[in-house]
Amino acid sequence: MKRFKITLVALMGLIFAVSAQKPVSLFDGKTLNGWKLVTCEAEVVDGAILLKAGNGFLLADKQYADFVLECDWKALNLEMWDSGIYFRSESLPEEGARFPWPRQYQINLKKGEEGAVEGVDKEKCSAQFKKGDWNHFKLTVKGDTAELEFNGVKVWTKSGFTPAKGYLCLQAEVPAGGQYLFKNITMLEL
Image (cartoon, rainbow, N blue to C red; front, side, top):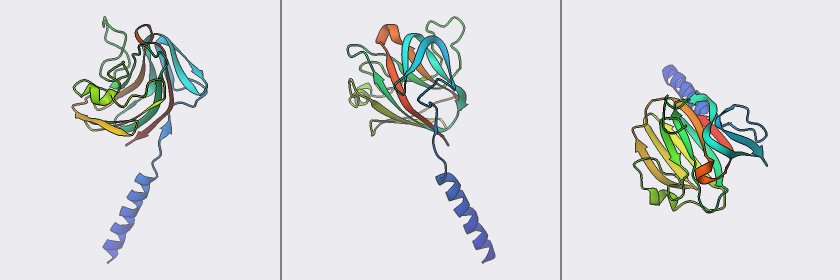
């Protein structure tokens, strides 16, 4: 009986610890604290990050392994848009790389490919896109598997995401796709 009580108390403590986890905001709505600009320009406008110029990215100052990332984003150019959110990426592109973006995984924000990563149904993803409005992503990454909910709809689950840890980046591809806004960026580490 004593062993059962100890096990029950330990189990209740574990349940409480897991349920007590809360997401952490990666953006305070006022400054770019916690982010590094790499070959692009960004500023805070009306509580959102505005990627306003350049080809590059905004790099979060910490690496993440298993997590749930949520954010709202909006393309400002209503004719052509192109950007992305990188996860488990390297901090800088390879020497001599053709493009100035990090290597690894990109959730595309390009017109017609919104929400897609390589190897998933782009049409299913882009069907969730709300043009001229805020869109919401919930990305869950655990082990080598990732899953994306796009405006409340699960659009893909995919495996093969290695390395096990890397940076989060917001891509600026302003010359090819215009400016973007990002807000309500939260991270729950698992």
